[in-house]
Image (cartoon, rainbow, N blue to C red; front, side, top):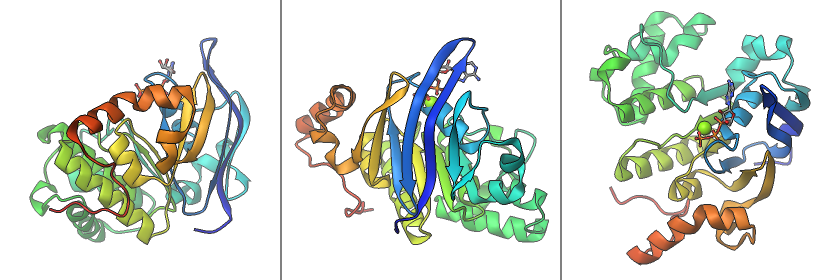
Length: 266
Ligand SMILES: Nc1ncnc2c1ncn2[C@@H]1O[C@H](COP(=O)(O)OP(=O)(O)OP(=O)(O)O)[C@@H](O)[C@H]1O
Ligand SMILES: [Mg+2]
C-alpha cells in the first residue's frame, strides 16, 4: 500500500428516469487498498460500481483512475483501461454460448493477450485458484450451480491480474464454508498482487476478511466511511442498523468477529 490515489470519485450524480440514485458521492481510494460498499438493497451500490467501471454514464461528477478522468467514452473503451480492471457482476453475467474456460479468458483472447491454447492453460490455473477442477473447463455455464457460476465469474475477474478488482457480491449464494474460503482467497490474491479492490457485500464476516475500509451508501451519499474493523463503533445510525442482525447472530453463537489475520482451519 502507498499514498498514491488509485481511484477518485468526485461529486458523482446518477439518476434513472428522474429518480436520483447517487446524489454527490465522494470516495478516495489509495493504491492497494481494499474497500467494501455497504448499504441496503436498492441504495445504489451496484450503480456506483458500474459508474466506476464506465459501464454507466454519469450525470455529473467524475471518476478518476490513476489521476485520469475515466468516465469519458474514449477512456473506458480502450483496452488499456479495461485490462486494468477486473469486474465480477452481481449476477455473474457469464456468456451462455461459451464454455467455462472461454468465459474466463474471453477478454484476454479478444485483445490478443493470449492464444486459445495459452488461454485454456491460464483458465485452468484460475479455476484451481477458486477451488474448481479442470473437469468443469469444457462445461457450459448453464450446467453449473449458482455458486459454481459465481466462482467462475471470480476466476474471470482475476484472469488478467488486474490492478483494480470490482466485486459485486462475490460470496452471495455460496454456502458458509465456501464463502469463508472464497473471502480468504480474495484477500490473499489481492494482497499478493497489491490489487486495489472495491467489493459489495452484505456478508459482514466476508467484509471483515476482504476489506480494510468500508463505506456506507445511504440516501445517494456515503453516510460513513472508515476502517472495516471499526464498523461496530462507527456511531453512524445507518451502519448500526445494517449490522444489527449480524452482531446479534454472532453474540448468539458466542463467537468473535473474523479478521484478515485469521485463516479458516480447513
Ligand atoms: N439500468 C437501470 N435503469 C433504471 N434503473 C436502474 C438501473 N440500474 C439500477 N437502477 C435502479 O437504481 C437503484 C439502485 O440499484 P442498485 O442495483 O445499484 O442497488 P443495490 O444497492 O446494488 O441493491 P442490491 O443490494 O439489491 O443489489 C434501484 O432502484 C434500481 O432499480
Ligand atoms: Mg447490487
